[in-house]
Structure formats: C-alpha cells, structure tokens
Image (cartoon, rainbow, N blue to C red; front, side, top):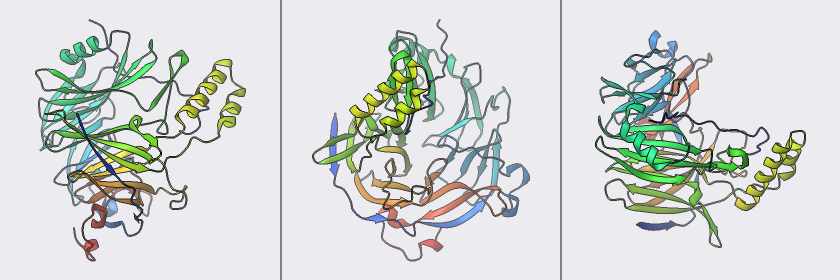
Length: 420
C-alpha cells in the first residue's frame, strides 16, 4: 500500500504583494448599519473575573478552528495545548486533553470542530505526518481516538481518485454523529502543478464525494510552485440544519455589465439540490503594482523574475481580487466577510470589517453592516459575538457581546442592551 503524507507544503514568494440549481439574484442594498452594533455582556478567563487557576487563559490560539460555541452557549477554546470549556455565563466547566500520544491526549495543539448535533472532534497533526482525532459526545465524554490513516475506505478513495503522486492536507473533519464524518481535504499534485479541494462524506459504510473543485486560493506557477492568498480566492463552508451545508467558492465570482457578484451555495447532502444566491459587491482591482513586483524580484535569480512575470500576467488576466474571505453561521443567518473595505466608510488601520448578512431560510439579503470587531478567532452564536481581548492589566480574556437584533432584520428593540 502506498504511504500517504497528509500534509501540504507550499512555496511562498517573498515578494508576493497583496495578499441542478435554483438561482436567486439580490440587488445591491445601499443601507449600512455602522453604529450601536454590539453591547458588552461579560468578560472572563482572568483572575479578576473570578476564573479558577487551571482555566485562566495563557495565550489562547486564534482561528476558526480554535474556538466554537455550542447550541446551548458553551464556549470551547484551545489554550495551552488543551481544550477549555466554559458555560454561557463564563463559568468554568471542563478541560479536555493534555499533551501526549494516548487516548484523549494531543500530540500537538489541536484544531477543534463541532457538529450540529453537538459531537466535538479535536484533530492533531504530529510531525510524522500521521493524523489523529479525538471524538467526544455532546456531554464531552470521550469516545475514541482515531488514526485517520487507518480509514481504508478514505485511503482507497484517494488512491483511486488521484493516480499520480499527490499530497493531502486534511483541513477539517466535521462529526455528524459518532460514525459519520465530513472530510475537507486539500490536494496538491506536484506533477500536474494543480491544487484541488474535495469534500467527502464518510457514513461508516461507504465514501461519497460531495464536492471536488480547483483550490480557488492557489495560483500554480511553473516549477510546481504555488502562491496562496485571500486576494486570490477562498473556499468557505459551514453546516446547516436538515443535512445541508452552505459554501462560497470565490472562483464563482463573476463580472458583467450589471455589476460584480459572488455566489452562495446551499447544498443538500440528501438530494444533491444546489440552491444559489447571488449578491452584488464592489470589487477591488489588483491595480498597477506591477513595478513593485518587478522591483522586488530584480535582485533575485532568474526564477524569481520569471515568477514575477507570471504573477503579473495572472493579475492582468484575473483583474479583480476575490469577493469574500470569511463566513460565519448563526442558525439560519449567514454573515459574509467581504474582502474589499470601502475607504470612505472604514479606517484602513482599524479592525473594522464589512459584512453582508443573509437569512438563509428566506434566501434574502438583510443588510450590510460595518462590524467593529474582527472575525478571525471569534464566533457568532445565538445572537452573541464571542471573541478574545485583554483586560486592563493586559491579560487575555474572553469577551461576550450581544448583537443588536436589527442586524438580523428583526424589529428595533430599545432595551436590547439589557436583555440576554
């Protein structure tokens, strides 16, 4: 049997500058909500907030795979190589795992993923290229530690799908229940100089391919090198109720006389139905930064100069940067983080972001909001925004905010700040 190394290595350019279908088209909304978005509810994780010693935050890791929030409001984070869990009021609840190679232990700091039914999965990537995940029940009871390379169905699928030498990186494993998993895998083929993304449904009896697309975030160059950037593109997905998931592939962005649009897909795992919503956005051009690219490559070797030429050609052909960089789901609501920041509305040096908000049940765009906090390493759940910050003494804490209901298209409530 072939040995699969489930990791990916990309060569970055030091001089890279900038980083069956139903269709519903939404027109551009001019109204922006930009003030009175968040109301602070509670902060915790420090001595001053009453957090016990073992739950105190050291240096919590940031990222969409380092924090999650359950349906009942439990806040789950990765800190000190362990998983710390607090209830919705910030009270200490339980700590999962520690450094080690045994059941329930983590070889390296884990990435965490939460299924809709409450199953929690923590995946680690040891230096030997072997992937493990620990699986927990919704009450956080430990189920088992699984070596992914022992999943012969998955390995056989990959072997039959990709005939030439290929490297794989398992980016996410979403538990649907104790026996069903969704794998999000990035694939690089160094011979064909291609990168792909594949979503796989493993129901414990068979493997089903859900989606197979070119990786929109990677520009493959000669010499089997790749440049990756959010400006180039993104693939973003999250699960919904009723065995559906929502995704955005920025390679679906299109530009016409009517405007520029990105596309939201709502895909059913059961029926394969793909409902799409198109939303207009203001694209950002790559611009005339070609001189900067050439200048940065001048003192390097011919390979670097050739790479700069390839990147310039790519910019000219693509013309526009990608539309979207992150998404968040809160029940039936979708928050879309737009790449382009309107300079007349947002200070480029601030951490403000521009979000489109959708009701996926009605498939309608609600509003566009200037959000006063950054998305990375934060969560939105049950009408709350949970993120990291620092207290007056400089110690890390978890900060929980109530989101103004008008962001969700709900009636104005003058007392929303006092209601939990």
